[in-house]
Image (cartoon, rainbow, N blue to C red; front, side, top):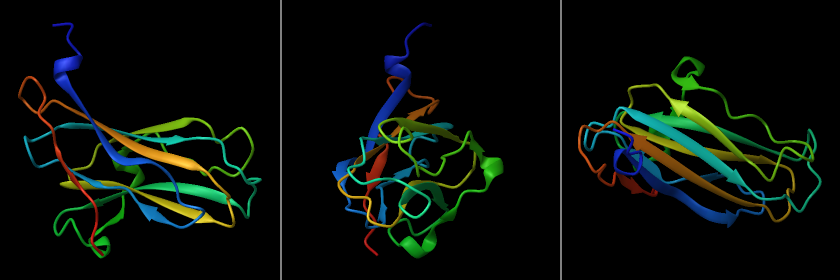
Length: 150
């Protein structure tokens, strides 16, 4: 069947916002609801107001947890073997104002993105989106997403 619309669900894990260089977590997505089998995460970046360099940069990192989804201490970086593609360090002009995509191949129930800033990036709008599929239901139902509380 050539019907992508009813076979995926797009979730906003982080509204486009400016963190002013302060590290931030996106919302988590719960892959256990509906037994989702496929996940793609995109980090959407606008143009950084500051000059990016090796000392002024952003490192987006995919994190996962198997339990206690609301506590940041429950999460750890996803192993490279469980990521299709890679988020890359954004530390030069021309590396911002784009979207970086990765696929999640792990088995943890909860996944989020940690935005790790170094230096004064200035105003820089960044958002995070998740696309899930293969839950066995059609149309694809909305997954649970929520903010961390600690």
